[in-house]
Length: 59
Image (tube, rainbow, N blue to C red; front, side, top):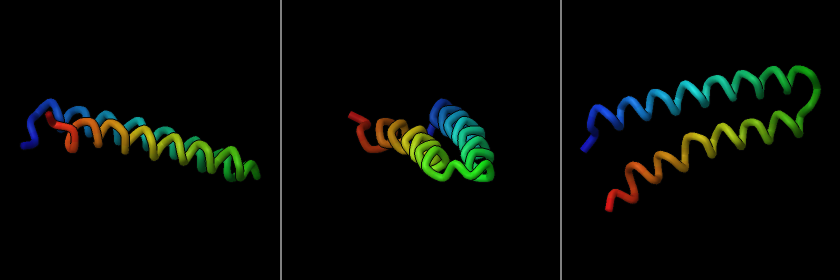
């Protein structure tokens, strides 16, 4: 069940990911493709791991 605290955490995670993705786009435009790829990877992990902990491992 999705509760208010989980919705708040989800919004916070998406906000952080949007900020990190915008930095990745900025890095990509500066011709640092490897750095941008790693920043995108960090953004992905920032969202996926907490969501896994919240929704899959509910025990």
